Image (cartoon, rainbow, N blue to C red; front, side, top):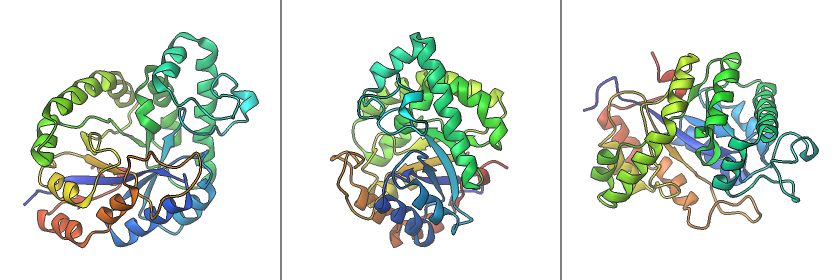
Length: 289
């Protein structure tokens, strides 16, 4: 039996990316274990996602900051260094991240776009539950500095620290110990500055995440296994669910299993195990007390 300190945030990323994603968020919250969703304010189905979220007052909706592999909120003419000829952000976060670090003009444009995304979220009228980044790009030192400066004025949202404990992850999954250790070392190093900055700004953070090494493949059997290894303190499991696949450039990677992740979130066996373990399901705003 878990104790009351085992508070678990269950998040769906890419809210607003498509109607199938939005459907999965609504249904997984109403019929399953989902407690939070991260909204892409520049995504094609953002407005439709907001309409659904307004019907779900207990769903913690956050901002999924997007600076890679997506669309800007600002006109492309205002952020020409951030987008290509197609008006979309780069799909190479390493290349873009390096350029961002060394270019003052790119940093200016990035801050303008991030500010616009925060403001677009404010216009929805939804309380800002949390902030994270598409492809975890909020770990970038330029981005973390901007978040720490801007976010307090938007209600002190929680900020995701994407570090997965390797031994707990390995005990649950039973595979890829070396890869899990390597990922842990990488993300610990990359998030050290993010954690320090946002906590100094008074923003709460999760202790660990689960799903980083299984991104796109948080299927029922994996979720059931992970639930046995959730440590005390605010932790998060994140998913990329959808009710079905869709066509277009915004589709999820072909290796992802969004329908199976949706099934895991609404699984009767998963819900029963959460109850049996005494895990408290919360959005970010309910995880810190």
